[in-house]
Length: 108
Image 1: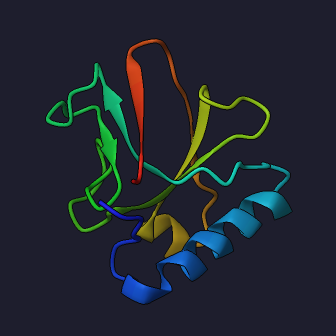
Image 2: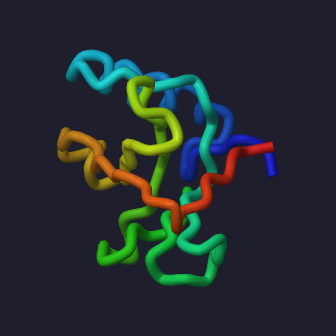
């Protein structure tokens, strides 16, 4: 699967850049890594998994995960997750600290 941002089709890269710059503005530096999913125990079907295009665990069905950014200071350990609702409400992305149980999946 190639890199995409839900609802944005060709403008997906633009949306990704806007969120990346928003993180920078808030002193949350992120890498340029394109992340598709954070899978709990490597299982996409697990309800704790965070996948671009799907609802955030414990979140609303109509609020898909738009992008996942990786922290530059703690790569592979800390991620910033932005949903459509967070973006529209101008809320900061959710920060997730990963443990050994998580598997990071990049876009191909």
